[in-house]
Length: 160
Image 1 (cartoon, rainbow, N blue to C red):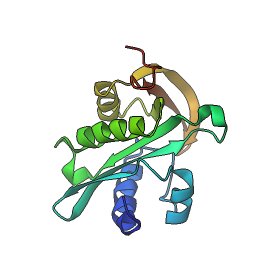
Image 2 (tube, one colour):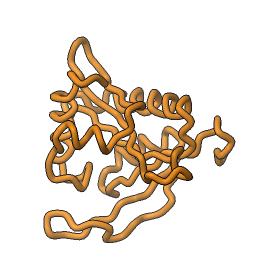
Image 3 (tube, one colour):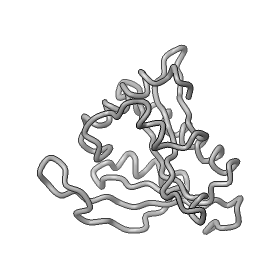
């Protein structure tokens, strides 16, 4: 992902926001805010020709040193290109890149209604830890999220 990718990243992010089942965000942040919230490494885009059709990135879960190898996954695919394996390839690359960067735990909080995302994460070694009930209020109603995590097999913390 390069700075010039932002317009497409934001467009795809907005499409996820509009589903109501991708994020608690209600609008796309400006680029600088998004940049501060995400790690500088492990930012990927998927292209079909010269068009960006998906993206993946990691956010730190804490500024504490002991959590330096723990990151939150974001992965979004353009709705016009879903069901074509783009998310699968992005996730595979993100897992590889994260392990190369010393990340030992990837985590994701996914709305239970987003079954495609849960299946994608599970396919790549994430396991459900539990459900955080009524963790956030969105559109006037309480929402749950399923908390998933994946432990790296390369760092010696894996749960094989």
